[in-house]
Image (cartoon, rainbow, N blue to C red):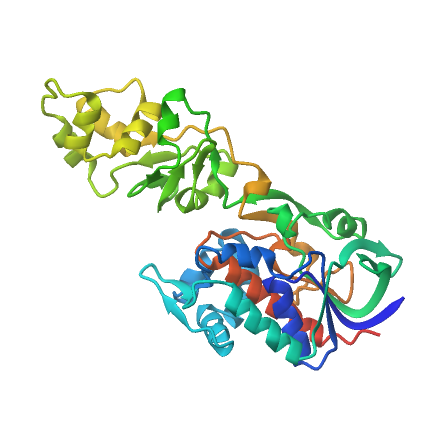
Length: 393
């Protein structure tokens, strides 16, 4: 049995932020990480440019968290977009804001920021133990499989930052859920978030696989989202589709507007003239300004196609027929996990005094665009600060 002052399980952004706050408060901190290296999902997210946050007022920032806004508001107020930017710059990583308000490190990668962060944690005395896989509870201790064998730890205070249930190969596998449930922690079932839609394409669509759909909008019935997405062999992928995951998950009908910058009247006027000998493809390209992949979607989802004003209405509200969300392990993130009712205002588990939780293992979701990283950092900071003041034994 090893006695430890403060234990953090999980070395993603939430866990590392909690460890930093604990160390700043003078606690002796051990971080246990199941994988051979830390921050694997963080690094993967940064391969195409690490989107740290969204530079927007607090009201707009918090609105992106939907039904979890009220629960997350204290954490996001304490660590908003400006705080995320200052944090990165304090690590020697200057940031810039793109035209959409998305904030990135100037290096456009996660690895330099992570290395700088790990150096600061090391200087603060944080000990990180990789290949330490948590295997649940044994009486009042936490059990780990390690390269040195089976270990039991009884910490004075613990922060769990175990991730959700997507991208299993990077460490977020949700295997911890039954162990917490057995200890009386209320959980919400996991579900995919920020994930593509499955579509059973006709054979004619194969030639369009890999093509982006730009300048389109998706209607959910209650809101409209604009964003690029890609036609893949499995369905539709990309940010424009990810934003409507909650509605798709709930079975709400979706429709595409392939000419969101044109009114239906303008489109109907353009399609009212005689087609002559032009093929439908050429007619839609010239009269409606649709590219090849959009025309393919019109044929796929809209047939049999009407003409004139009815065709314009179809293009402006094209039924997006799909067979559900792609599998959870393809999702960028998940909803579900530790229910908010299982936590007190400090993010301590009511059923397990001295055990706090943070990051994606909590039941919240947000779209891509910096909100996920910000939410993990903010909840990790909050849990770490409150865990630091927990007296323990």
